[in-house]
Length: 400
Image 1 (spheres, rainbow, N blue to C red):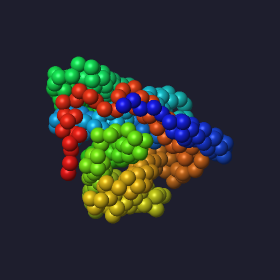
Image 2 (cartoon, helix red, strand yellow):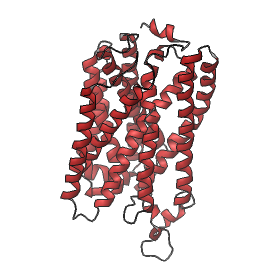
Image 3 (cartoon, rainbow, N blue to C red):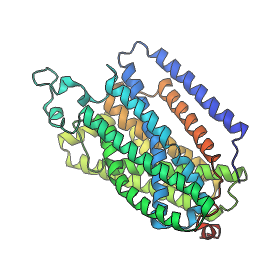
Image 4 (tube, one colour):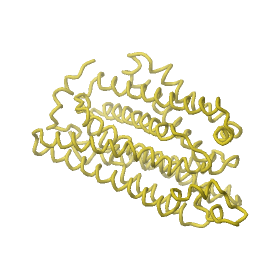
């Protein structure tokens, strides 16, 4: 069955983007006299660029995970996963533009290590710690790593996409086993790149600080947000009469993934916080002092949203099969993880000057509208049922 974007969906995404532009313009106008306005715009560009890029790469990871484990149940929602993964090129493009502006535009950087004043001996801003990290944290090596991440991700995404379409035409198992082997290789790259990219793009904002859990923490948030998008999108398509092979057991599985990854993220949040706060080492605990002093309600409120709602509401089997509950909790989780990324970036780049206003809401709505429109467009590019997938029959009869 071919998917067609409804007029209502087009209107909704258009309205989101228009409102986003208007709110952004109002936010810039209200803060035009702020000397940090350019940095604030760039920080928010990075927040939304990374957040929506993470949804695309998270979907590609989940797709590869299903290939590598030769999972059968997911075949009926395979095209949903591929549609979200299909945002990856757009996400990489947006993120690359934001990083280019931050790197090369005067007054736009939010990374102290990009400012030569901090690495030039004799300068009154000279920082020995930042200079000591300059063999790794320098613009040239930063962009070598960034382009490597993006090129490798793009190559694997393109390969999975092309083979998926080809499999519909030729059938058999040869393409399936090729995907199996390719996914195993991709997961090795992803294991390294997902952590290293979070160090480069996010953790290096707080250049004096580091955490060995940071990469896993960002990955868990990425995975949880991706599963939430997948379950909401699947339920949306079911409501429109698509995906006839998707039953309550598929929805239940997606709900379990959302529940499980919420706990994974919460566990890593607590481990990182507890170990650093209890040890009370000055160069480590300063990270949390900044966030608690200036963002206390938002920081702990974000944790309660991302941990409390899934734990209290999605615990039961029935809740994981209830579309209203899943969509409501899912939307709350997506906002909660956007707030997580907001705090990760804004607290380090803007400190006490960071706040959520028209600018932040506007850019988020603009990015969300564009993301939804591209996902819906991706769904129109291939039949929603992968007719020759070797595990399709198993997926159709999936019951738990």
